[in-house]
View 1 (tube, helix red, strand yellow):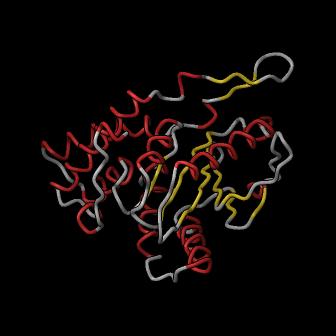
View 2 (tube, helix red, strand yellow):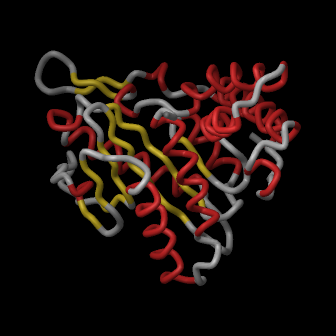
Length: 253
């Protein structure tokens, strides 16, 4: 059985493919969100799952400021909360502003509901329905540990799922598997790591080491690009059938 950390991204990537016939405009966006939710809901026996148009994560999670937020999908096990932001821009693409708003919503909700959510690993995901993910958006997402799933490139988790599904071995596959195992936890990190309650007065401390610097982000993007190239060399599943967008050069990051 695949781990949830590989099953969830792989399922969401396949849901992107299933949504290609959705129309343009708001209706297409709603269909995209629903396809993501339904695909993932059916992929695992969840403790709790809530889909689009639900406020407060469907869990009565309060924000610190009292602002009520809408999250596109939330899936909960006994240990982990997967929270998904879905974007389907047929013009333009996912921008750093989209990522920044997602971070702000997560921070406000975590600060307001630490007592009820703090025991869970909160794993955030942005899913783009198109290949258009701005380089700055990807950089910001990596810096804050948000996994970005799009048709542009396989993540290490999807690659691991494909390697195990096809039971591939040999030097290239073994190296790719090892590299993805090392890279994955750096790209996708529990959001709880960034802020933690102090011992007194309900203050929260920011763990600045958990927010990666630009130099570290560039290293991770380069390692990710190498994993994608190795996956393509193996004709690995979606890596060959989906359009591949080149990673930005170092001076563009």
